[in-house]
Amino acid sequence: MSEQEEGALTCKVVLIGESGVGKTSIISRYITNTFKSQLMATSGANFVTKNLILEDDKEESQSIKFEIWDTAGQERYRSLAKVFYKNAAVCILVYDITRRSSLDAIKNYWFKEIKENAQKDVILALVGNKDDMYQFEEITNDEGIAFSKEIDSIYRRTSAKSGEGIDELFRLVGQKFLNPNSINTTNMTNEELKKHGDKLKREKIKNEQKKRNCC
Image 1 (tube, rainbow, N blue to C red):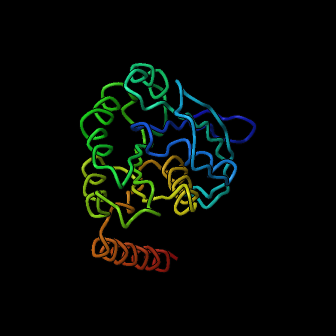
Image 2: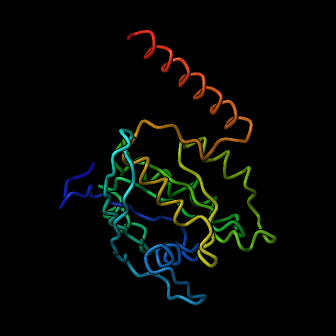
């Protein structure tokens, strides 16, 4: 799933989804912190890299080298996409919150393609892009959370235009890459997050008590 390269773990990330959902814009915002309202549709795939330093589960700093592939969403390129996500460590499924058909395509096509062709331990992230246009949304945040639970994925709403959620998305992906067994808390409701937080607090107290008793 990864390889050591000059002290960094290489993580292949593939963005998948229909044409026009903002995959290229998300990558542009993350890599160069820029946004263009008019972009040509991606033909085939584009490739960029970026390093990110995070703490692993042992609280030690670890560098991740993201190899990010931007795939074309047009139907004529769909068969080509398989080549890129076959060996991916992370698949980011992007839809446009103002276009219900873009989420339907993920449910009815892209997710099935990943299950059939990607490696079994691939990390999934579901992204509802164009959050700056929330007043025109056709897909609510609750719907996104519900589907992300179904597929056990990281979940985030983003806006490539404003930059909202982009850095956090890749930070969450990186953390999951370093610790694959961690729970996807991003797709929990506020009530579920509170319960999970309370559970972690209880476990922390128990561990501290064990440490005191063992000495």
